Length: 100
Image 1: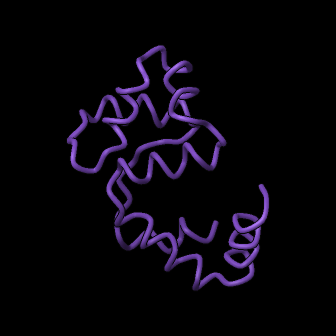
Image 2: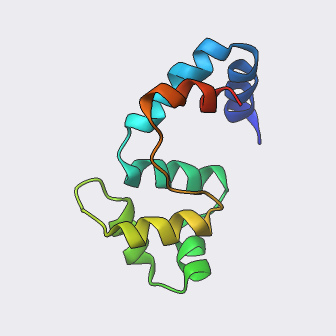
């Protein structure tokens, strides 16, 4: 991690309330946006992710486009490729998960 991302991570670790608000805001983003953010955090281009998933790059672009409604299976497959999980988190549990 470098620069701004590292600074944000340090701030969130030092301030649990900010981490909770960050998690709440992130959870409200469309899944496609969350996926794009996580792909970039893993330092993967759309092309690299497509290669990893054995799918054409335009499929990744469509999946990450908030105006496109991708199948949940596409989101889950892409999430696994960026070492993430798709899960439903009850609102009352979000705070506990955000600070761990």
